[in-house]
Image 1 (tube, rainbow over the protein chains, first blue to last red):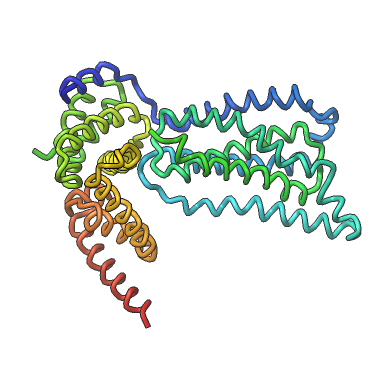
Image 2 (cartoon, rainbow over the protein chains, first blue to last red):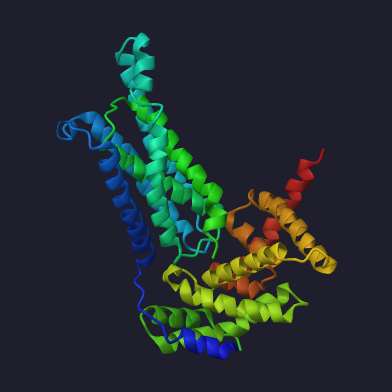
Length: 213
Length: 179
């Protein structure tokens, strides 16, 4: 095909594009995947029976504040990496703030109980499955983001994959909070973060292959 | 004929608002820009350069939602063009017939170049963002000073000064590295 014909055929299809198209596309991918994740959690594990009471307590909101702030940071990183132009990601260190805050709470909690109970508090009831469940429930959201990326133009594929994985992990952890009854900060800091990191690593691993365009 | 950044950007923005005529005008204006961009980088493969121009036009069209209206258009354009070029080399390397020695040598050269490029990237990290970018655009990517200025959205003399100071700082650093 010669170039002029190509241009003419491309110019036949020129829909209006909103300024917020990139952000909207990413949020849509996360929301679509998130619905699947939510359905899986409800169907496979069930929502914790005391959710209503828990929502009046501190630890539930501590967990949500942690995972949601990571998720929000990850969305911004993903949106930046979804465009071809290089933009600074230096502000990403801000994501250390929720981690440090949670660590602070964890130290406070440890100080309040005898050291013999530390191990039990750290491992909780579900440390063996928690990271893997977070990783598993991240998959639908990650797939949703792959769909988002089909219209986007990442040029740093590994970084974009990692950001998408981080996003999927953090939002998966957020939804997993609806099931998980663990209450201690050091549990969340270790096992939730591990699950989220696993998702981000997986994203970095497959990014260059799956995000090519 | 060189179309100005402002004109390209106006066409792009109108296209995003649904103006098909402006969009076609933009794509037409990009052809000579992209041809010179690719020809400068692959002197002996005229056909490939033309294919890449078409691929890039398609990418500009399908990925147009990723253009941020508040940022320079040419920066976005050349980022896409560079990505298509890298992808072209990557694909090329994967489908080389084993007996095609000449092509292999060429792709090997590309690999060496990318390794060298990584070293350069590490060196450039020590400079300010503006200096690193000016050096990368003019000294490595083969953009003219005017193109680099357009891309970064700064003045021509600003680019020249950035390159000069950046190179000087690099030279000082390399000397300092050796005992």
